[in-house]
Amino acid sequence: MTMTSDTPGITRYPLAERGNIIIKGRDLDAIEIGESIRKAKAYVVESTRYLIEAGRLLSHKRDELGYGKWLPWLKANADVLGFDTPRTAQRLILAASKYDSPSPRARPSLPLSPRSALPRPRAF
Image (cartoon, rainbow, N blue to C red; front, side):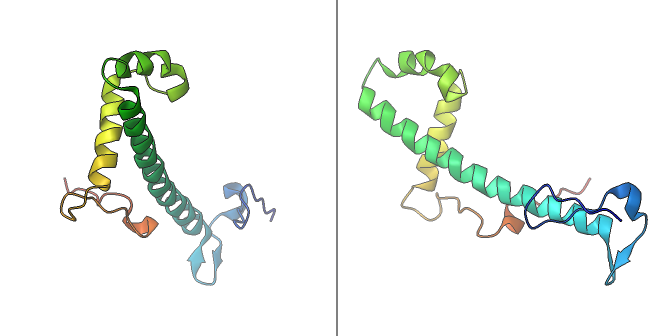
């Protein structure tokens, strides 16, 4: 059986070679799927933190520019910012302001663990 590793610390076995191999009571397919889900949840938490930081920086820039200069600045820097609508900037700023709010009820908390990063599945 040939092992491959694209990510440090994660050993992957090609699906074609695994079949229904069980190691210490664990199915290798289930292990790989679980690892992928844990990594995805961790990236959601990290992405949320970056988006909140972007909202903070946008808020500071808006305050720094002053009246009448904000929208032209957004338009002139759309390619660098990665978005081209003022609404995206508004949403990022709102998210940052809610997170920075002094009221615990108004402030959403970032999950402490990747496990709680994704919403619970809805019943259909």
